[in-house]
Image (tube, rainbow, N blue to C red; front, side, top):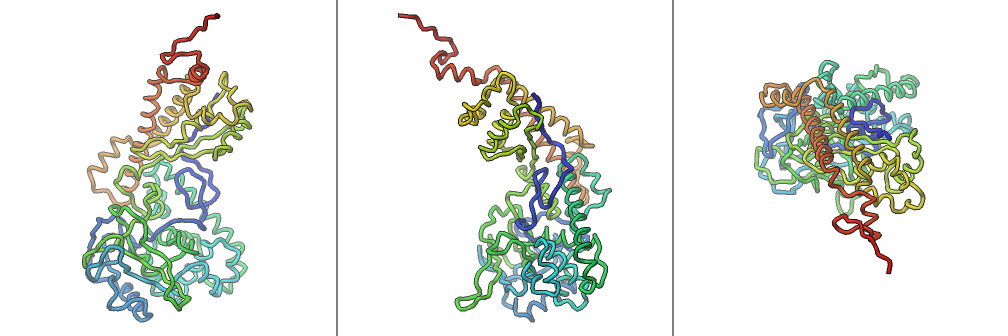
Length: 494
């Protein structure tokens, strides 16, 4: 009996915005938070109390701030203002700000979302597009229009970030063997396919609306902007850019995402909506206001979405992909059991460094590996209890098989990197790495540590095979035919 187990990067993709080798998520439900950096400015994770690095903001930023003042969005009394910071641009406190205090409120008329697209000149032709594509196209069009009302905002947007989506082929070589590489290549391919479709269905038939050339590079830029800057998980808003608020940067030291931002009414007698941004911690005057982007993202996801990674061990993860083979003689029975327990033909398990295996991983492995003399458990009489059975060891042969397959897969994946973990750690300790190489080395080292952890777990399990209690022993005990010490009980006839 063989097990289909993939720990190497997959090259098959069907959508975008996803993690590792999991199925891709669509942009309609993405959960990205903003990050802004100046062009060619290196990204980094900030300290909790980061201060400005340049007291003189660039002219474009001053113009943007003045425009916001003229529009009544901010005033001299606003507690924050944009400034240059180590990350590029950020929000800096003008005075001491208390925990959970509101620092910005941006009216809906300044939001960039599918509603703004619908109300624009291209609204009709964009009505059938995916929401993120319509917003991306809107951004590109406004960027190319000299008379765009959004010009002052568009002028402060970066041309690229350190997100792996913007890496060159030479830079991507440093990710050889990683799941992030295949994810990045899949995203790039997805963006290209969506652009070709957009070009055929919208751009070429409606040249009167798009009289300027729009290229794949333009579309990739808009894609990257949305990935790194858009807010989501808001009331009635799954994709929205909020000018000024999207300058807020990330801090790994902030450990809560709650109440950082929300959509609320403008007042008791107003139908207008406001985007409200709060500081989750107290901030001193001159310090940068920061939030937590997402506690659940792995370093690979942070690198893909924003262009940075963290040093925290639990940001390192690796995805194991398990599959019930269609050639398995018990495929139908196994699939039925899996689906009855909330799983399917393919299952994805995120293994996090320093954390135990996902609770359903071993049961699923045992189910996939069932065969030979253990196959009787797949009979209909056991259908209501089989999941309880596979939550515990089935047989020595079954347990030995899953240990061997997982260990072989881990070692195969480790052999796919062009460096050793020791070499990566030396590079990280030595410093002097540019921002992208630091990301690549950190990702490589993190994945390898997780693979070594998985291999170690199943190596230890192999050493325990003779000590484990298997199904037949448990069954005999339930029937009272085996004592607690494993002795067979003989009943003498009266």
